Amino acid sequence: MSFAEFFANYGLILLLVVLLVFMFWSSRRRMQKQKLEQEERARQTVPGAEVLLQGGLYGTIVSYDPENLDQPAIVEIAPGVDIKVHSQAILRIVSGTDADTVAEPLAAEPADEIAADDAGPIEPDTDADRKPNV
Image (cartoon, rainbow, N blue to C red; front, side, top):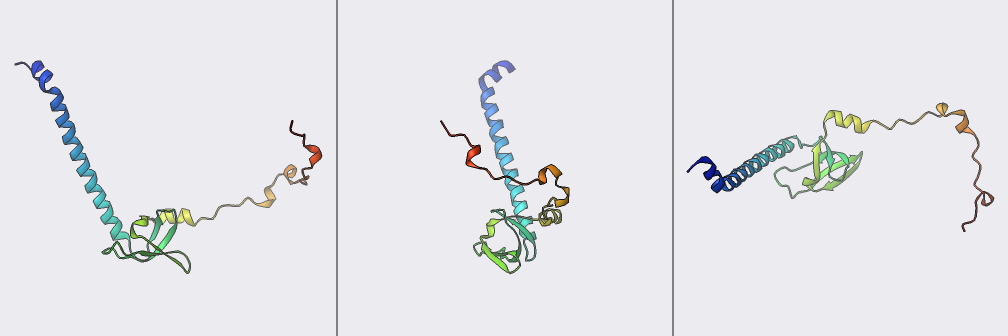
């Protein structure tokens, strides 16, 4: 039996076995990586940490119980405004650079820089200017 005959008879089966082994290996590796990320997030999720919630809100953790995930976490989203959220609603811990970009106010355009032709009076829209719909 030559290599070509063997591959013609069993090549597809070998290819499927190799693909199945690769799928199980990559799945297991991905699950281990996710577990490590969850453990790291649990270590960082302490009162006083800045967090991003699933709904897009930023806040500071007031209380959180990593042992009992059914217990809601208390997050302060503004001074004196605390909300209860499910502990899994905490998407990620915000690093110092993320917090700086969130805290920056939007820059408003100074009134002095408005162009002179833009500063003219605004004329009201009158019915005489409009053409009737036909």
